[in-house]
Image 1 (cartoon, rainbow, N blue to C red):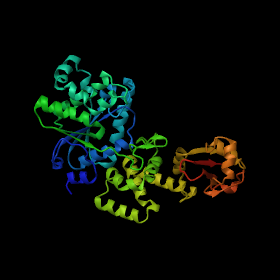
Image 2: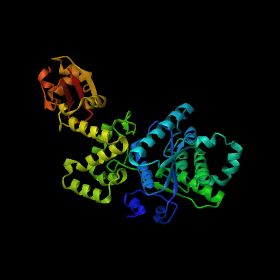
Image 3: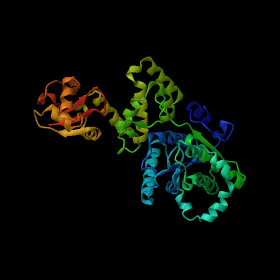
Length: 417
C-alpha cells in the first residue's frame, strides 16, 4: 500500500491542513518539536517517534527540534495550571538527554543518519524583543489566539488563568516553523493532537509572511480504551523510555498487561509489523485470548524498538521466571543481576522468619499484616504456597528464591542465602 494509505490504516492521522492524504506520498521536509520538560520521553511520545521513523523509511527528510528556548517558556497545551519554570541548567540536561535517547532509538531501527537535530535556543538567544514583536507578533490576531482551546480551558472556571509567558508560547513555536522553512526548506510539521493550535500558528505565519504553502499534521493521542486515560500511565506513574526510570522488563510487562480491546490499535501504532502480520496475530489472539500471545508479541516488539533485541530477550526471560514459566536456575548470572534491579532483593540467614522477610522486602507493612498474609495462603516461595513461618534450605534453588504475595508481578522479591 502507499505510504499515505498505511498511515490511514495505522490510525496515524487526526488533524491535517491538506485535503488529500496523498500529499504525504511526495517527499517532504518535516519536523517534530519536543521540549525538555523531563530528561526522558514516555511511551506516549513513542507513538509519534514511530510516525517519524515511518516518514524516514518512506524517504522524507526529518528534523527534530529540541526546544531549549520553548522549554524556558512552558507549553500551556493540555495543562490547567501554570507550569513551574525550570532552570536553564535543568533544561540543558533534559534536552541533551532526550537527544541522546532519540538518537539511540533511531540507530536501533533506521539505517544511516536519517534525522537532523536542531535546538531553537540557537536562534532565539540572539533575537531582540522588539524585532520579534515587529516581525512575528504583528501577524497574530489576539481574537484568534484567545479562541484557541488551550487558552479557553485556562481562562474559564476549570482553569487557573494563563500568564503572558505561556500565552506567547504559540508565537514562538510558529516562529520555529518559519525559521526551519527559511533555513532548511521544512514544509510540514507533525505533532500530537494536543498540539494542533500551536502547529496552526506556524502554518499561518508562513502563509502570511512568505505567501507560501506549508502544512501540519497531528496524530491522535494514544488512549487506554478501557479507562479513557492517556496512554503511558501505570500504577507507579509514567512509563518512561529511559531504562533507569522504567526497566526493559517493566516496559515489557506494561504492554503484556494491555487490554484485549487495545491490541489491534497498539500493534498498528507501536510496531513495524505489516498489515498481514498484525491481522494474523490478532486472529490467533482472538482464538485464545487467555494465552495473551498478541500482547506478548506487542510487548516484545516495543521493548526491542526502545532497548534493542538483547535487552528485549532478557526482559522476556525474566518475565517468564517471574510468572513461574521458567525457574531461577534458567537465568544466567548477568540475568540474575538484572533481576535484582527489577524487584527487591535481600540476603537472608538460613532458617529466617518468613514474617521478618515479608516486612523487610516490602511485601507487608507490619508483622501483623505478614502473619495475616501467611495464614490466608497468600505467600509462596518459588511458586509453592507456604504456611510455616521458617524458611529452610530446601526452599531455595542454587541459594536463591522468589518470595511472592498473591499473583501480581510487582509483589515479588528475590532472596538469597
